[in-house]
Amino acid sequence: MNKLCCLFFLFAFLVSCNDDEKAKNVIQKPSFATETGEGVTLTYTDSGIVKAKIKAPLMQHFSLSKKPYTLMPKGVEGVFFDKYENASSFASADLGVYYDKEKYLVMKQNVKLINVKGDTLSTEYLVWDEEKEKIYTDKFVKITTPDQLIYGDGLVSNQNFTEYRIGNVRGNIQLKKTD
Image (cartoon, rainbow, N blue to C red; front, side, top):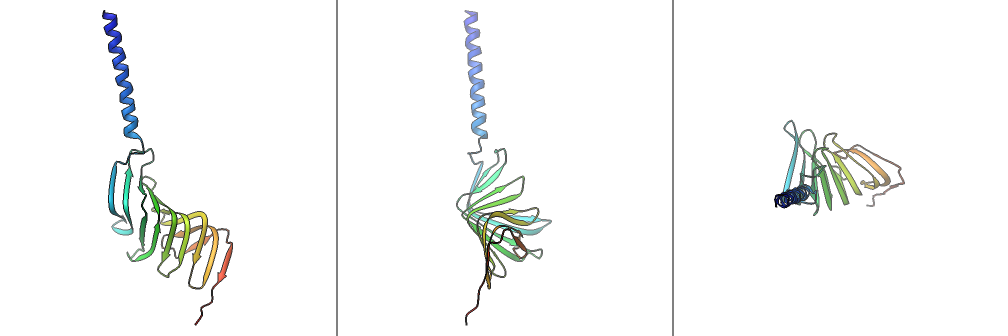
């Protein structure tokens, strides 16, 4: 009888340990948002100076993921500021993902970036590196300025989108203004 009781308790202990492991896996799965917010605006500062404001209709934070991130599945808009805290560029995309530890924002699908001069970048993938204050992509880009269209593959820019390099330029079309 004692052997049977010991076996029963050993089995119960092993099953309960297995259930604890399952519970840990469910809790730590990155598919569960630990925080969710609607109509959220995040302000990024450095030494009290506003560098950017990111807005999204829905933000889901996945803090238990191996690489913690914030998902913006219903779109994202960002305003970037110069050192005097003047708005210097505006970005929007259908989807955004901000990686907490690495401090960068990935924007995907219908990405637009507009600077204060009205130059517009269109692409499907763009990364904002918060610490380096750089914007980059290795995907196809189209830049529209008041007097030209530029096509290429890849771009590196300051976050203000005032100084940029385009990789593999495929076309540069001069536009004439008509009166």
